Amino acid sequence: MGELLQTTGLQRQFRMGDTVVRAVDGIDLNVGEGEFVSIMGPSGCGKSTLLYLLGGLDRPTGGEIHLGGRRVDRLSRTRWARLRRRQIGFVFQTFNLVENLTVLQNVQLQALLGGRPRARAATRRRALALLEELGVGDKAKALPAVLSGGQRQRVAIARALMNEPPLLLADEPTGNLDSATTTDVLGLLRRFHAAGQTVVVVTHDPRVATTAGQRLLAMRDGRVVDDVRLDGGTGAARALQDLIET
Amino acid sequence: MREVLLGLLHKEPSHGYELKLAIESLFGELWPEVNIGQIYQTLGRLERAGLVRSATVAQGNRPDKRVYELTPAGRQELQRWVDDLLPAVRVRDTFFSKLLVAWKTRLADPVVLIDRQRRAYLRQLRELGGLADTTSSLIGRLAVEAAALHVQADLKLLEFCEQAVGAADTGTGG
Image (cartoon, rainbow over all chains, first blue to last red; front, top):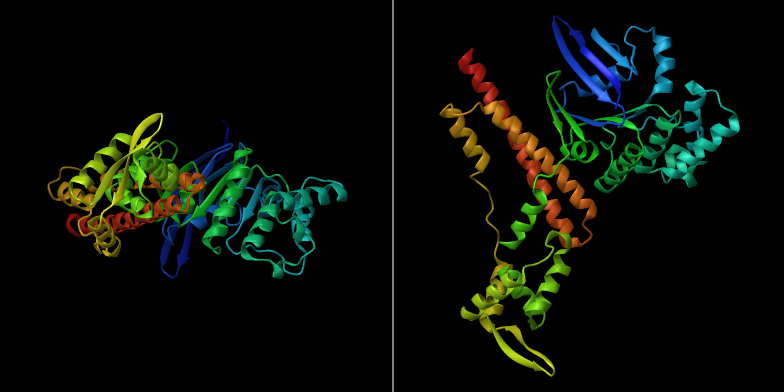
């Protein structure tokens, strides 16, 4: 398994009056191709800032980011943006759909903005196929306003995957969803991961973090304080039986 | 086991093997392969306590079977169990005790203990998530949900412990 994403000594500092806030404070990170990593921590620990740095939506004040073996933190804004649209899919807590475009147009827009050149018909076919796969094929002509939260997030996932990016980043993707819809959306992310998609999810919810990923990074005060592999049995199932049997 | 058997016998008089099947269908994946020996042992104990009684029923060419039913005392006992409230608060958390002792006696680094325990809880939570996906019975899902919520509360407590240890360290170590 090759490395897809790497950071060394990554930093993001903000100056607030006389004080310097180290939102991301020297993070060394490796994400392999095909990995599903959850980043967890209390609010204010810097996890969203980290994700924004990884996705090029914010610029680091120090350190390096390598994506697919290429150093990207020094690219100009426009080159980074172009690369980002092809290499990285982004899913947000607040969905961020364009409200006056239809569902289908929202997804197609991603291809127009930065995808590989593709015939219009092919773009439409891929967008429809993705929407179908995500269970919102029948909403293609609807405006986002008529969709439920869960449906909006499905459309946002379709949009994020439109250009077949090697890396999918998600910032609290279930933060605005009820528990049943959360389960659905996590199930979808896991399905794409099983098909080979590399995914990094940021969440404050331990349940989301543990169901989603195989690997969990715990953050505190801008640093990664633990890197946990989640696979392997713990006897929780057995313990549950014992609990009932006694 | 005791109350589960009383409850099933409240529904209908049954023999041991029927009880085994009833438990398996009620609890599903949470309690696979119920030990038949344990069922008979428990039934024996309940009978000696006067909570159930049994009668032998002949079945033609197959061996006789022993059918159990609730006694009035058993019915009362079951009702009491259903009506009883559970103890409200788990005051003595075992990890908390371990942490306090290890910390105050310098037996182990509290931060290491907390990190290790957090990893264990997170893995448990993941396993419970997997179990929730494969558990189809309602009772099973409820049991998994209960366990997952407990683990989440334990994780929150760890966060609190971590802060307390951190605050104490900076307070004394300067």
